[in-house]
Amino acid sequence: MCGIVGYCGPRVISDILIEGLRRLEYRGYDSAGISITDGDEFTTVKKKGKIKDLASAVPQEIDGLAGIGHTRWATHGEVTDTNAHPHTDNSGKVVIVHNGIIENYEALKSRLKQNGHRFMTQTDSEVIAHLIAELYAGDLEKALLEVLPLLKGTYGLAVMHQDEPGKIVGVRNGSPLVLGVGEDEMFLASDVTAILQYTRDAIYLNDGDLVSVTKDGYKTFDVHHNEVSKNIEQINWEINQIEKDGFPHFMEKEIFEQVESIKRAFTGRLNRDSATGHLGGLDMEPRDLLTVQRVKIIAAGTSYYASIIGAYLIERIARIPAQAELSSEVRYKNPIVEPNTLYFAVSQSGETADTLYAMRELQRKGARVLGLCNVVGSTIARESDGGVYLHSGPEIAVASTKAFTSQLTIFYVFTLILARIRHMGVEDGLDFINALEKVPSQIGELLKKTEELKTLAKKYYTYENFLFLGRGLNYAVALEGALKLKEVSYIHAEGYSAAEIKHGPIALINESTPSLFIVPDDALREKVISNMKEVKARKGRLIAFAVEGDDEVANIADDVFFVPKSHELMYPFLMVLPAQVFAYYCAIELGRNVDQPRNLAKSVTVE
Ligand code: M6R
Image 1 (cartoon, rainbow, N blue to C red):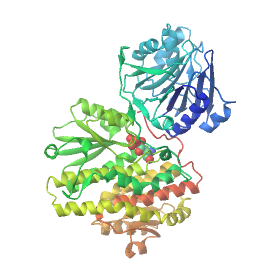
Image 2 (cartoon, helix red, strand yellow):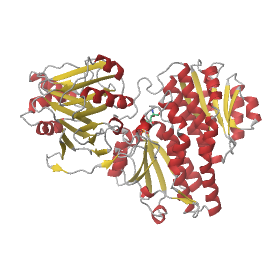
Image 3 (spheres, rainbow, N blue to C red):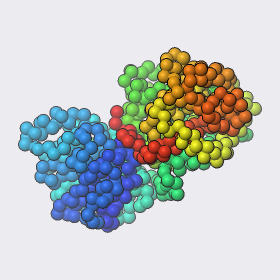
Image 4 (cartoon, helix red, strand yellow):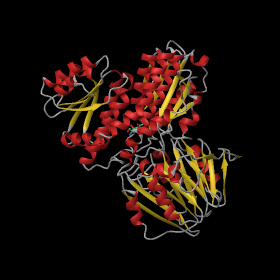
């Protein structure tokens, strides 16, 4: 949830750290800080607020031999200058930045206090600096390796010691850390966005890996301090992908990118000749897939909502029982892993702790878990037993948009593969491919109508509560629409099955609680229209996302936004787009920080 950056090399260190933190700000944005050593002492600047606040607190360029920086998403201790990282020990010789949670910090702290240590912050992280100071005997790597077994919890750590200037030691357990290898410079970061503009050569650390860097090189070690060699991988993202590129916000840019990102998710993965799909990363031949009797999908947040649609589609079209579950719940329910069940762990970032730990628990029980991730080299991508990348490009806005539609795309291709090896014939396979290939241009059509959604947002942004209602494949679109509105505008919104409202939520209906109905022209349309009438009869305001030419819905609703007529299975793509745009414009009207909504972080690496 926090972002870490480290640098050794000839450039102005404060500039590199602040620019890196700016790139990592989406990981956490309540406070930030840097520490730089010039060989004699550390200069540390810490500031509550955004990276721009930190930048203005740095008096001038700070040069030196090495430096570390951190952008915080508070877990333990209030958001204050003092609680911001880096933290130090009482001698001031050790500085650390930490991403993760030290669960046993209270016990460690009271033991350290008995030994005379004085604590300056309310954080869990500070104990690490004190422990290193206590165990240090001239070798930072060694001291850190002695400290690690004492820590219970998760960490991505970068550490410096005044007696070894010019060196940064990093280690990870449960929180990501990547090493960027330059010519005469080295970088450490929580993710590659911080180093992309300087180097394409990256080493993704695994849990238990320790790395020691100076400007001249790096060494990687295992937990027993044995040197190990790691592969350098190429970062294939482009710098313009992490820029706003003329858009006012990343969220809007990423919404508009969906024409291309959906295309990228299916390109090379659909085969007209055989009327099926191919997902090489699954590493499963048709004969392996034939043995699959059940599909289970674990995920969190928006990825979970995409997974609900994926499960629905697999069951309905491929006729294989399928179920999506919240990863946070799976981990602790002692899940039953049955033979012939195929699991997916779905995560844009590939770092979500709930999903990662649930995946590991399933693997411990013998499950084959495939990863569906966007971030290349992420932990879930590396630890899963095969998988598929979304190829959406970096998603920087905290509210996920393009990753959702790319996840859907992969589930559609997977469904096609499963269905074709069972009962689906060539003609139906081709119909499916045709329909899916049309989606990007239909999204393009919708994006020409964003002004209509802006007008809708201007009309409704003052309402304090919303219901989002949909059914079937579009039930989870309602959930996602409500989540988007909540996240970026802070308007309270609940997503429900349109059929469910009569079982309780209809009690909320009055003139000041609008209901946004998703009404595709599918088999459930009539029933959804009945649900709309039930709301109208109770004086509820109605907004409908409906299919072009649906006058009946237009006549019932107070406001309607039309999507193009499509294959009935493709409506989740077309219905979620206006929900994203509507949420975006409501947030703009309310003057919210769209890309970095309060209290949130892009990648949730704590439980
Ligand atoms: O990186 P992941 O897809 O695993 O993230 C899961 C959720 O944290 C994420 O979708 C979250 O709900 C977003 N803020 C949604 O916009």
